[in-house]
Every structure is written in C-alpha cells, then in structure tokens.
Length: 151
Image 1 (tube, rainbow, N blue to C red):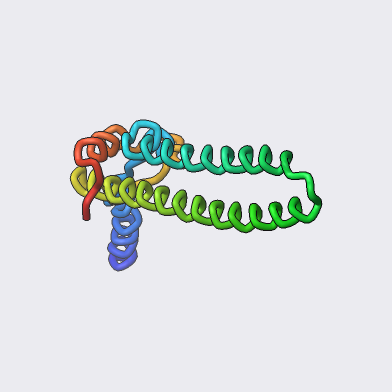
Image 2 (cartoon, rainbow, N blue to C red; image 1 turned 120 degrees about the vertical axis):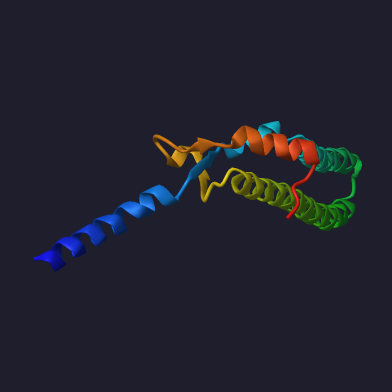
C-alpha cells in the first residue's frame, strides 16, 4: 500500500514537472520581416532585379518588332531566349542568396533573444492560442541595432 502511494506521488511529480520547465516564446515572422531594415533593403534589391528583367524583355520585344526577315526573327528569338534564361537564373540565385541571408540573421536573432530571456522554445505566434511570451519586438530591435545577428 505504501509502495503504491509513493509510486503515485512520483508519477504525479513526473507528469507535472515538464509543464513548468519550458518557457515558450512566440514570434510574428511577418512583422519581423516588415520591420527589419536589412530585409526591406534586400526586398528592394530583389524588386530592382525583377524590374531589370522586365525592362530587358520589353526592350527585346521592341527590337523584335523592327526586324523584318523571318530568319533574323528566329535567330533573334533564340539569342534572346538564351540570354533571358541566363538572366533569369542569375536573378533566382540572387533572390535565394538574399532570402537566405535574411532568414539566417532572423533565426540567429531569435535564438539570441530566446537565450537572453531564458526561453526554451520559440514558435510562430499563430500556433499558440493562449500564453507564451511575444519576443517579436525584441528580435526586431536586436536585428536593427546590430545590422546582423551573430552566433
């Protein structure tokens, strides 16, 4: 009988302990992106590169309209398609690199803020219905103060 009471007490303590161990933080990733100055700059650079691609196509379209020979049109189309494919690939790599830099900086800042505030787990704010500590503003502040997060 005494053994059952001890076992029941240990079981209850074992089940109750994890609830008090984790401190959960939340972040609004979209808000971080909107307020992080480096992310704004990167998005602007990405948009500029996309505009360059559009201008390239418009210029080539105008050049194409001036060509009269069907053979020259075909050669022009082929050359333009190759050039555009190369430009499009360069744009995709540029965009991916910029997005990766921003994501890495944000992730590092979230980790730093979580450690500074003794937060064990950080999730997107939409995952938690109630509770949690919102660290979004602290993350944005850290990112904008340091320019980039380190660690």
